[in-house]
Structures are given as C-alpha cells and as structure tokens.
Image (cartoon, rainbow, N blue to C red; front, top):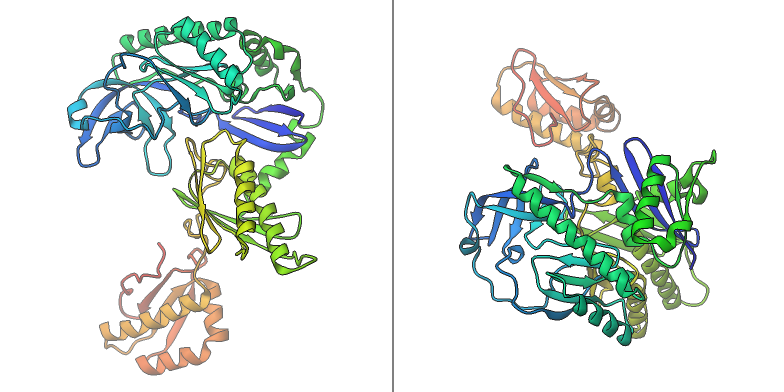
Length: 514
C-alpha cells in the first residue's frame, strides 16, 4: 500500500499524519508548551521509598514527583549477553515473561540518592511520570541500552536467515551495552548498523557528561522533536512522500533523513500551495470524527467509545443496519466491520490501558473466532503493544494496549466545566424533588411562619411552575408557609439555596453546586 507522511507545523502545534491509501492510519500531535516526556533522560533525587508498594518517588524537576517501580530499578550489568525476542518494535523493554529475582526496593534505593532515569510514560491525570533506570536510546535501525547486556530482535522480522544475519552483525560489532534490532533494520547493511550504533554510543557519552555536569535534579537529554521521532518510527519502504508545510522544519527533516535514511532523501517535499496540507485528505474531519463518542460504520451500525483514566469501553450496535439474510449473518458482518474500525480508532485516539469491547452476541463459535482473528489481524500493524486476551460467552473482548502518552481526547479536549466531567447533569425534575425535600427539612429547623424563598436556575423554576404545580401546593400545605422562587441567572442548573424571609439560608444540600 502506498503511504505518505504529512507534517503540519503551526506556531504552537506540530501534527504528523501517516496516511495509507488516502486513509489516516496514525496521528501524532504535540504542543510546544506540553511536549511528550517519553524518552527524555533526567537526573533525579529519590524523595521517598515505599516498601509497601515496592516503589519510590523521584524528584526530576517536574511539577509532580515521578514514579519508579522496583522492576525498573537497575541493579547491575549482566555478565554475559543473552538473546531474547523483543515483543514489540517500539517498546525496548525487558521481556515481561522473564522471571528475575529482585531485591526489595529498600535495599536498592534510599532517600536523597541521586540516580539517572528515563521517562517511560507521560504524566496522566493525577499521576506523575513513570520512569525507569534502564536507559534506552532509539536509532533508526536499533535501540541501544547502555545499562543492559541483552540482544533482542523484533518479532516482526520473520525470516530466520535474516534474523541470524542481523544477530551475527551485532555480535561482530560487540557493542558496550544491550541492543534491540528494530523492524526497520531488515535488509540493512553491516555499515548501516555500525553507523547507527556508533552514533548512539557517542550520544550515550554526551548523556553521561551532562549527568556529571548537572548539580540539581532536572533534564539532561530531551527526546527529539515529534516530526523527527515520527520519521524515525514510521518512515518505511511503503512511504512514497514526506510532505512538510514549513520551510524551517523542511530543512531540519532533510538534514535528519540525509544523515540516517539517505535513500529516502528524494521523497521529502515542501508544500507551498494555498490549500492547507491536512485538507488534501480531509484529515481534520477525520480527527474531529475521532473525538466523537459515537462513530458510525459504513453499513449503518455504530460503535460507542467511553474513556476513563485507565479503562476504555467500546460498545458495538447494529444501528440502522438490518442485513439481507438472517440475524446471525447481520451480527457477524456488523462485528467484523466494527473490529476494523475499533483497531483504527484505538490507533488514532491513542487509547491505552485496559480495553473492553462489547460485541453483539454471536451464537456460533466459528463466528466468534472469526471476529477475534479479524481483530488481532487489524491490531498487527499497531506500533503500540496490544494483547487480546479472550472473548467471553457474552461477546465481551478483553484486551490491553500499551499507553505511554495521553490519548487524543485528553490532548485536545478538557472536562466539561458545566457537568464537571460527569458527562451528564441532573434532570430538572430531579432538582425539583431535591428542592421539595430540602423545604421539608427546613421547616424542622425553623418553626417561624415565614415565606420560604428558593434561589435557583430559571429552567428549574419554570419546570416547577409548569409541571410540578400540584406537588408545590402540597409542600406549601405541609410546611404551612408559601414558597417563593427567585431566579439566579448565574446559578448552575443543579444549584439552589433556600432562605426564610427573616432567616438564614439552609445548609448546602447534596444537589447544590458552588
């Protein structure tokens, strides 16, 4: 499939889109004021060790202390290199299934200790950055890990003879540290691998010098800019053009490609036409679509995506699609179309954590297997690590997707200030009932016969006069005093206060908004 990489640069934002056959397949957005921290290396100071959590908090100069788990604490270099198969090309971690006897964190770290760390996950929500002491430096062909002694090969390189060739080349170079051979290395020459490792080795020397020079916690080596990072990770043989719409970034991209990927140098072009770059493929419409909660499918079905801090729930519905043959066939076609769109949306939205997919129930086991295989197939091209666990009898699919940075929704949106991020507000009838209950409580506080004045939103007052007149009269009879409503233009629809004509307001109720 033909592919293009579009780099759209604005004063405060850079967007990089990977487009396959005119369809947006990957998207990276970075604001100048809040760039990703993943990959950046810091000098840190341990501020707290938590034996009960086997973790520590480390001051790295950010707003919040970073989180360091015991498994990410370096103990010592391995004596001999060992071969393992890296489970994902873009995630240079030790294999998760490898059991390693670990000392407790209180034996490895102490408060006030100075350590070198690298950000593995951006701060998310109320959580600080996740860090590791196992430093990794990513190049075009390999990832160099100076604090380890491991040799890994991407699983996406399937040819055994090629794997063996690359392994021998790296072993012949004998780098002073661990190496992961990336998918982009397939077919690369020994000279290209040697140049990559030499560059990363010199980079590591500069990092060590910067670490020794810095006296306080803080940044010592930032990750490269988003456009260069995207080229490093996304540029492949399928990419026919790299289009940039900014002259300065165009020069920077050309320099980067000519140094690390010279065979792609002719593919870089500068966009200077009047049409905005992303409008060529209507990418802004696609991005806007990916911010919607409901996504319509071509057949007439739809999926609903709900994001929480560490959980994503996706519901599949037939919608307007009625099928042509029988119910089971309609359900199968909807589910097959849905999992393709779900894989696409997970990648564009950069959803991560635990993901639950509520497919439409399928009676036939072969249909369930077919849909599950389709989902795995669609996820195969995702650069983030994904694991599909199983499908239950109810049609629920459990899966995970590695998250290192905030999702698209988190990056481009903020919680609704009116509903306070709940996604809903109370009905006017519910607020009216809360007011009536508060009036009953008020009469118990004050026995004086005085008017009760309710300060509330205009729509609630209108609702009570139009729909709850009988209930209002019953309340007035019960508390033996008239009720007067005073409209407050700036009140939240759920906010209200009750005053006695000669008294003080009632205590705020559970339904009151400040």
